[in-house]
Image 1 (tube, rainbow, N blue to C red):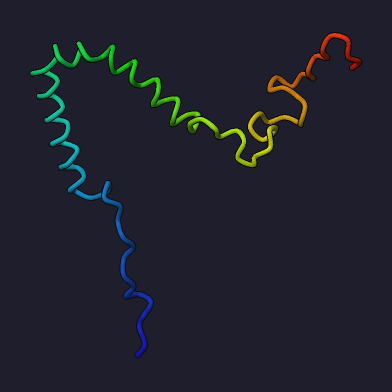
Image 2 (image 1 turned 120 degrees about the vertical axis):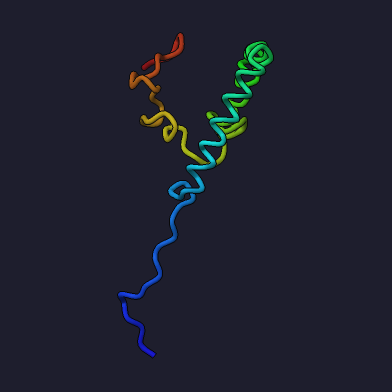
Length: 100
């Protein structure tokens, strides 16, 4: 049995490129509008708390949590320099009483 190359299955389309996604976005925008317009006082009152709660989330997602510095990566890999150099590219200052 021989299949022609012109009868291939089309590539699957991403959900966000379908008409269902457009309907989902429109319904979401309408829901957000009514929620914010009807509950504006509650939303604005919670903003300071949401700002404080965003700090730990940013720490986890931007720094990848605690303990990530000793996982086998070289120290200069994270700072972009040679071993023994600082992130600014200047050599480290010698401690008091040490020779450079």
